[in-house]
Structures are given as C-alpha cells and as structure tokens.
Amino acid sequence: AGVRIAAARGSEIRAVARGRVAFADWLRGYGLLLILDHGDGYMSLYGRCETLLKTEGEWVEAGAALGTVGDSGGGDDTALYFELRHRGEAMNPSQWWR
Image (tube, rainbow, N blue to C red; front, top):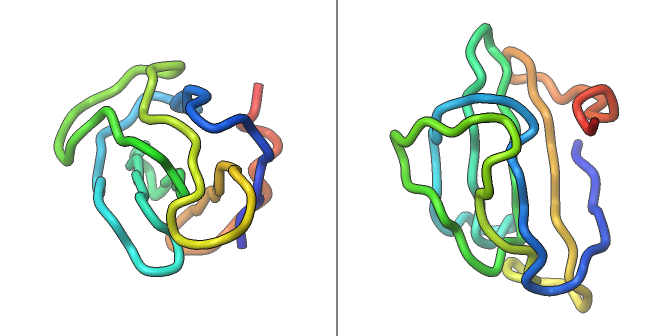
C-alpha cells in the first residue's frame, strides 16, 4: 500500500505535515515504524527506520525530523517505507511529498 524510497543509511526522515505521534516502535514487517496522526482521518507511516527521534504522544510540525533511514524489518537495501492513509484506506502519497 506504500512506497519504498531509496535513501542513504542515516538520512533524516521528515514529517510531511503537522501531526501527533500515534506509534513509535518496532512492528513486524515494517521494522522501526513511526505513525503520525494528522487529524481528519489522515495518517502517515514511516517504516524501516534505523532510529526514531520522537515518541508516542509528541506533536511535530511539518518538516520536523522523525528519525533516520535504515533497513530494519528486512530487506537488502536501505530505504524509507512511506504510506499515507485516510480513514484506514491507503492512498497515493505523491501529493504530500512537496
């Protein structure tokens, strides 16, 4: 449902929009995962992280550093797994990438 974005290990991962950290921990299949709740049913997911810089409950602004890119959760390359959901349904994230 999401996309893998190739990036160098340790590259900063930044929030696509303001939100509150709903989850920040290891999750099978995603590795280290951070989920931001943006309100109105929108959530963004950032997986395969090497490190997480925020904890559950924290508010973050658009562009804030959330963690660093890694290869947690499996795979042979370093990449960010990014997914955007609206009311639980995956959606095309390209409009949020600016």
